[in-house]
Amino acid sequence: MLRPSLLRRPAAWPAIIRAILLSVACGTNVRADSALVWSDEFNQPADSLPDPSKWTHDVGAGGWGNAELQRYTDARENCRVVADEAALDGRALAIRAIRTAAGEFTSARIKTQGKFAVTYGRIEARLRPPRGRGLWPAFWMLGESIAKAGWPACGEIDVMELLGHDPARVHGTLHGPGYSGDKGLTASTIHAAGTALSDGYHVYAVEWSPDRIEWSLDGVTYASRTADRLPSGGRWVFDAPMFLLLNLAVGGNWPGPPDAATSFPQTFLIDYVRVYSDRPT
Image 1 (tube, rainbow, N blue to C red):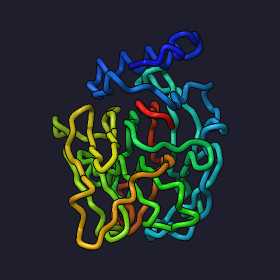
Image 2 (image 1 turned 135 degrees about the vertical axis):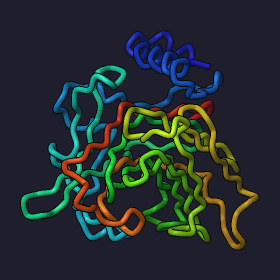
Image 3 (image 1 turned 90 degrees about the horizontal axis):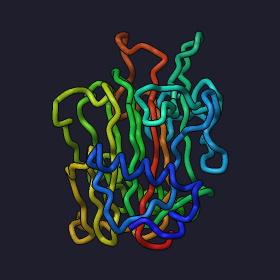
């Protein structure tokens, strides 16, 4: 249910109306008792950087624990708002992986750490991933406790991961104590039409409630995990605030390196990110 306080604020109407229309048009299964509590529509002027009140950058190289090849930067060439006719309001955030003249790969990884976190709700994004071997776009979440508890004790929810050489398939995964890395609890689905997800925008989401997490593609649930069905010795850690991340990796242990057929630059487009909840956040 939309909160009356939001309806009384004219500034909130465009986001509310857009959310309702999109849920009807795309079948995103936003519950009637949910409220939009946070969003970024990326509708600022083209060539703008991500809103600094909502996002910050991870920067650096070193493989990021997965033997990735890219160096993340906060440069405009790697992450900026662009005009896009296929986006709902004509603009989207573009995360770009670039191969420099020296053969180095650069890209971007942004996060809401220290700015926004959520416990439970519907977390969704309308995304258009790139295509090509060695590309690894992702929309995911990490526990706010990571600085103190470390990974994987903080918990990780991968809302959407895609391997560029398998562009019709989306993966959703949980990482926690006793089920992390290549032992993460993962599931996948293929786009209903069998076409590449990179051919257009699709809505990727999780419904996160106490003791249960469900993944969906364009409003169709394809996997769920519950606290009572963990590997022996595993511990459910998905009961505390988590922040959001978006990134485009190049190479790594999972997708492997790009090959001669993978052209650069490559672009990961994000039309919007929205969080719905029926409880205080």
